[in-house]
Image 1 (cartoon, rainbow, N blue to C red):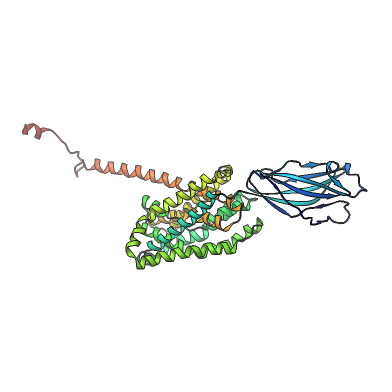
Image 2: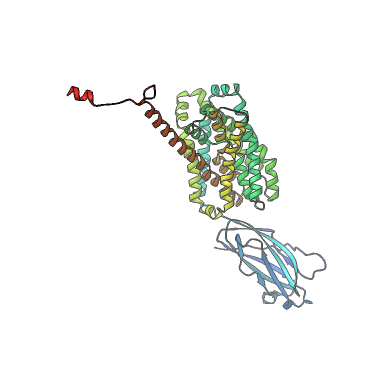
Length: 443
């Protein structure tokens, strides 16, 4: 589609001492992916200067985002009206992101910068994108209603009586994970603030509902896991905005990204409402509450799978972003989270079931919440670009847990076989002789 960007001359005059000037309308232009637009410009060259010795040059900071068809232009070939040379730049949106083109004039081999133009390439909004955003919001709300129904205040009270496990888990979840996410993002993406935002939002998210299932499968302390999920979910309403508006502000500032205060606040408040609804259902409608609690665990898994799979299907561009840094990030954040939780619990000599529960709770982040906040709180194309990080984390998180689960299954079966074989020996260690003598006698 050919989109002509109209120009109202702003008269952006270059400093005194240069004989030419360039007139543009704006410092920034948006275009859709694969679209071609024409960006007009006007170059003013006094008649006293020989235009045949001048060249108009366009330098592109990132050709992978947008391309310019005619980067070298001779003013003498442009339509001229007195001192005014009029031309257009044919720009194509190549991939999502931002790039800057620098407009220069070459005079006798010397380059003189005139103006910078920012190009922002976004995806055209589709019906399926609206469906995805709406379905994510609806499913997350249902999940938080389930959380409200499933909160067992008695179990939480009992857990608080022995607070060492929850305290260690809270330190890992609310302090170590955000700092770890910030450090990984800064180390792997020093020049890409949008990717730093993606991993940071994932690191400050509460623990996921899948942590309870993995705790059960790996023989961890399930009541402690459920309590930590509850504490993490409730505390996230305070910790997430706190981290976003403190350490996160540093990332926003580095990327010249505006902090969406109102959107983030609306998203956080929007999660409190379904949580309160769930709590009311628990108090007023116990039968409905029992039904919702029963479906909470499988629904949590379905929610995460749905968001990740749906996000991949409608955003196949994500695979173009899967560099080694993205894969390493997807492994690094959850796997180091498992390790931090494990080490912290072992240092304080906690029981093995508690160690497993807290290690799993620390490493598993609710990537659905991260995607929800990024999609609803950040403007395009940053929101689309950052989504790849939580998707990568969601894919990589279960890998070590699956390996440990398979090892546990093999170990348990071998142990069961050994116990069965030991039953065939007498207490003194002599094997029990089983003969067919009785059968022969009966015959």
